Length: 462
Image (cartoon, rainbow, N blue to C red; front, side):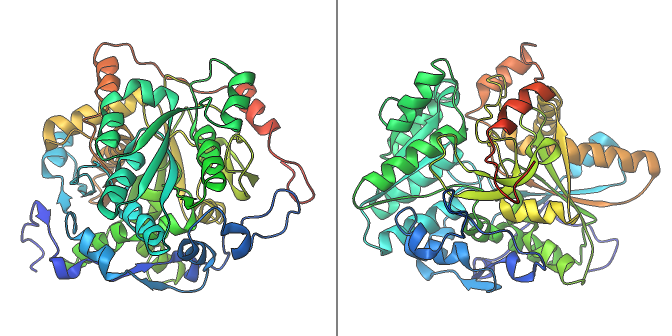
């Protein structure tokens, strides 16, 4: 293509260009993510240890640090064809609004009923549960995107689906809850009195608004205690980032069609599924020394695990029933402010992304939610899509970087992940529009409470 020929608004791949393999970035990492360990023995968890919790094939994917490419079963690719490939969009209107020389692209993952990228892993995990002959699965959900995606995948495959939804989201997002129920899921606000760990959390903090850590505890307890069920997770784990690599693989293929090389790739970061999936093939090139990129993780200032957390082993859940993962964490007992409007509520971060960040291969910034919603509304007004609050964290920093280009005159190319739509987040938009939204940034004293719960043992001092 000639250098001055206009790039289309939307770059589409063909159906045949949907990836046939997932990319496992761990294969190219010199420093592999630390293994999950048993909280009692501090020994690495084996496949046999993980089998009572996760599906067998997913355990194999979780533990595989060496296979660079893993085949996507044809049944999953056939499901992907219902909404993939997703478009890579040139944000011409946003560029004009900002009067910036920067070129801005976004990968739009909201073109399915779940409204987000989460379906990419939900169908994979449900498929492996069905293949194993299981009756159903349990999970947690924060803003509801993952729960919605999993309920859709389970309905498609005829599996039972039990969802523990963070209580404040359950109350703030009734329509998201009802979509899950429409697809046949049983949705319970967490913490609840239906599990032992839920009752314990409520006894200690009756007014808690919940967290993903609480909901994970309940979902794991039910999975382990119910015959024919396994637990599935929508973020954080290695297997999830593997499935989400379809985002980055499609993004890179679309860019390559027009000879576009991004200077920076930006994604929101809660547990890491979207960010990890988007950046994986670019990070692979960086790890192999083939090309360099700025990779930026954007997290909420109210739940700043990367920018203010500790890189240590910690429980993945509040009830402390899961293995320990080495990650950037605020402590499994950290509960984000109820005023936090996005779904990026997890106390920790993907072990893969945590290791990459620790090794200096990517950056992280935290942003306040009023600035996030300001960016969301600007984007909606010029690009025509109402973005999810989570995605809007990436939009905020993409705008900030484009404005820096305006100041310097640099024509940098920016790619960010638009993970989903915000049509179930209108209570948050209402609060912003009414001037009722505020920015809660936890104090050092508040963070210290979460850090105090991190397990101490030899080699895990904070």
